[in-house]
Length: 117
Length: 115
Image 1 (cartoon, chains in turn green, purple):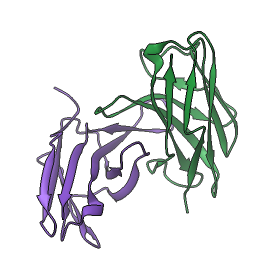
Image 2 (image 1 turned 90 degrees about the vertical axis):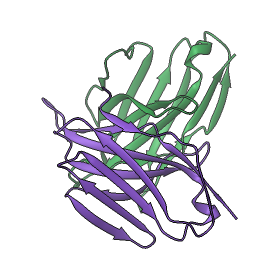
Image 3 (image 1 turned 45 degrees about the vertical axis):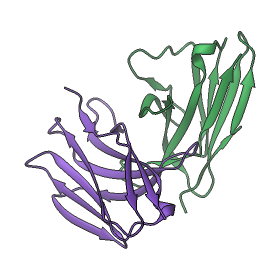
Image 4 (image 1 turned 30 degrees about the vertical axis):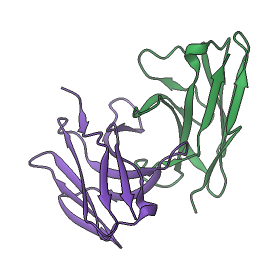
């Protein structure tokens, strides 16, 4: 149980284009979904927190107009990297908190590796 | 001082060894403590979750929390080559003004278990 998927697992795009990453909870409904970014040999950095039907809450220093988050349903959240640049290349990981839990258990997706050329 | 400190290693041990991984933290508000395992180019997998001081055992894994010292540990007994991964400690505190727990991670310790 508590499986989270991400799509795509790997994407290459050209500088200036936009890329959408999907995060789905497959066997549970997620009250909250989180988006993280991870650089090589570094820990996960929380980018934003999203609740279904509400605007996402962004961490300090994260540009909300660049990283658009939509949490359309209790099983799907999307992250769109707009006007991507090479410095946006990273490993993006989502996590989800099952509905009905206390909110401190997060189950992670397999991650999406973004390369901007 | 960073909120969570974790020695990044790398740590290399022979198969069958007991592995000890540690994190220290500075924020007294942290209430829940977790250990995640992350294989290369994969998302983190929740291994252990605890919220009180003391030990919690699950198979070959034991999580230990000492809130008075702000110190947590993960012990792996009879380590296997398949345990080779990065181990991340994580902690949460209730987020002021909101209803979500913010997870704060350590940098992760890279473990290699040699056959």
